[in-house]
Each structure stands twice: as structure tokens, then as C-alpha cells.
Amino acid sequence: MPAHNDFDLEKWKEIDLNMDSLWVIGERAKWGKRSNFYHGNFIPQIPNHFIQRYTKKWGWVYDPFLGSATTAIECEELGRNIIGIDIQPSLIERAKELVPSDHIHTHFWVGDSSSPETLRDIQKILKHRDIDGVDLAILHPPYFDIIRFSEKSEDLSNTKSVPHFLESFGKVIDNTHKILKKKWYMVIVVGDAYKNSEWVPLGFMCMVWLKKQYNF
Ligand SMILES: C[S@@+](CC[C@H](N)C(=O)[O-])C[C@H]1O[C@@H](n2cnc3c(N)ncnc32)[C@H](O)[C@@H]1O
Image (cartoon, rainbow, N blue to C red; front, side, top):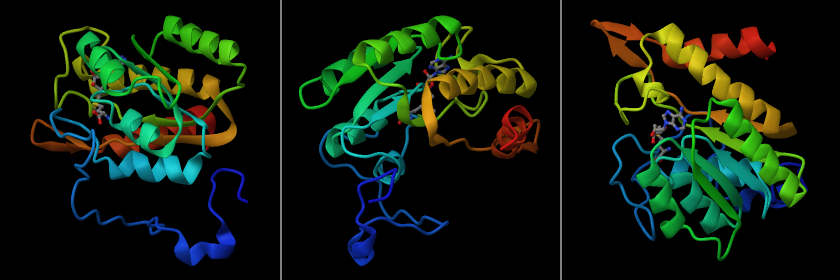
């Protein structure tokens, strides 16, 4: 069995997951608890793919930009536990109602994912659960200021410039890196932006930032 998932590679023909580098996703998954109410949400197939590929059953997933709880819904569906944070209280209330702790373990709370307080809170949970880290972190931040998610100054969509955005997002990555199990996975999903009629390659800038910081 591979170390990071439950697939039986001897039966690789039966694995129902697109392993190509280009994913063409026909239609957004809409069944069950999935809804498309939140502007700026994930296509559910994206977190679903990563959860299947990079966690085992009952593994732990971390989402520091929980939004409409797409990752949490996929975790429930696939039998994975989740720690999810968002800066907006209404979204956290919704996540708690939508994905209760009946079938999987869930920890949802309101916080600034770039702060040292949030890092301490997660470390407390990990200690309480007696686990040495999360298996997979899925980071889907605001794409700088293209959608303003809230009025809060800590909201990454309210950062004043691209360097400020990268600095704040970098703090979220640093926090995440500290709670991720060694040799497991961090997925970053970020789109590019346009500013003053110019393309801002945010995805590429994040990769450069990561290379400089962690020498990946
Ligand atoms: C692109 S959305 C994530 C959408 C989510 N993947 C979904 O499917 O609904 C980014 C989210 O990050 C939240 N956010 C922005 N800055 C934050 C911060 N500093 N800490 C925690 N959450 C933050 C916003 O409220 C927003 O819900």
C-alpha cells in the first residue's frame, strides 16, 4: 500500500481518479450538501481529488481558508477528519451545522490563520488528539483583492499591495508548515489577478516565495 493514500496500485486500472497533469472537469459536483452559494468557492472535485490522493481513511486535513466548507463536505464524504478556520463567523457557524462531528472529527473556529494565536490553538488540538500533525493542508486563499470577502483588516483580500498579500499569505504557510506531518502534503490553489490592466501572476509569485523561504 502506498504511504500517503489507500489505493491498491496492483489494481491501478480500477482507480477512479484523474492522475493527468491537466484536469478537465466537466460539471461542478452539486449533489448532497454541496452548493454553489459562495462566490469564490472551490469546485468540489478539487479538494476531493487531493484528499483521496494524499490522505488515508480517518487522516487529518487542515483548511485555513474554509469559506463555504467545501473541503469539510468532501472530508465527511470520504471519512477524513478536518480542522477548518475562517475569519468570518457566519461561515464557521454554517460549517458547524452543515458538517457536524457525527461521522468524522471536526474542529471549526473563527480566526486569523496567519496569527500566532491560531497556530497555538491548532497545536493544542493536535496535542489533545495525540497526533503529531495533519496529513494534508489545502490552502485556497483570496486571490489578493479580486473578491473582498470581509471588512476585517486581517482578511487577506484587504491587503494593500501584492507584496503585503505575499507577506500575510507567507505567515499562513509558515503556520501550516509547523503543523503538517513531516513528508506529507500542502496544496495551494491560487489564481492570478489583474491590476491596472496588467496581469499579476500570483500563482508564480507564491512559488517563488516558497522556493526562497523553504528551498523547495
Ligand atoms: C477563496 S475563499 C475560500 C473558499 C473555500 N475554498 C470554499 O470552497 O468555499 C478564501 C476565504 O479565506 C477567508 N480569509 C481571508 N483572510 C483570512 C485570514 N487571515 N484567516 C482566515 N480566513 C481568511 C475568507 O473569509 C474566505 O472565506
